[in-house]
Length: 184
Image 1 (cartoon, one colour):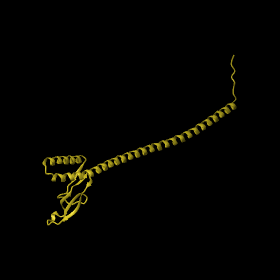
Image 2 (tube, helix red, strand yellow; image 1 turned 90 degrees about the vertical axis):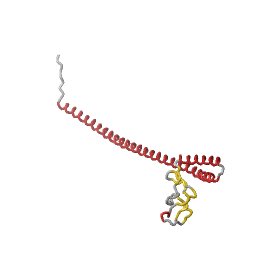
Image 3 (tube, helix red, strand yellow; image 1 turned 135 degrees about the vertical axis):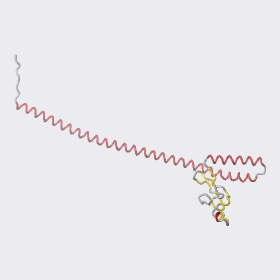
């Protein structure tokens, strides 16, 4: 038995192909729309990702600046606290120096000298140093002139000729100006 083959008329085949082609075009159009929507979403997300990355970078920079400001503020506050204490200790040093010159008992004088040396050593450990004055050129940033004395030697004009009270500095910061007599 031979199977019968059906022949489909050419018109029917072309209508079928047209329908398939239209269906494929409709699917392609729908896919293109979905692709356009996906590309738009991807662009928006990429922009959002860049914005968030920039925000993170700005926040990191702001935090670094905050940390640096706080470190500098802490350093300054620590230095201010040290200076406040040192300002209270320096007059005690002056009194000890005066006491050393007035004590007649050698053993007592030696004990007071030891205390004086310990205090000056402690101040030195904190970076406190005496401001040179005697024989130096007068500097209003370092010295406080309370007296002037006339001199005949022109080379000595504006020179410190006597120190009434020692001045001290901690690094570049002046804790107390030297109180001096200046030649004019």
